[in-house]
Amino acid sequence: MRWKSKTRTPPSFRFPEGGKIVMERLNRRWARAKLSKLGWGRFRWSRPLGGPIKNATVVRVGPWAVGRGARNAPT
Image (tube, rainbow, N blue to C red; front, side, top):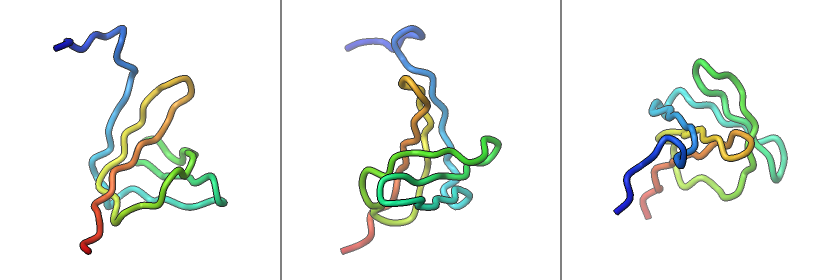
């Protein structure tokens, strides 16, 4: 087991209000998200959403990246 360290863990913050996050597709590869108190941020659309957005996490790995969590649609 490893404990988290300030030097190893990249800076990140979470937006838990899924209903307030607006996502807009720009083209086949890119999209943008409007996050409260941060504004619009562009990210690469890597896979389709499985349902409504639950949360978003912004992580700094080189440039800032947006990770989004979605609730899976019932099958």
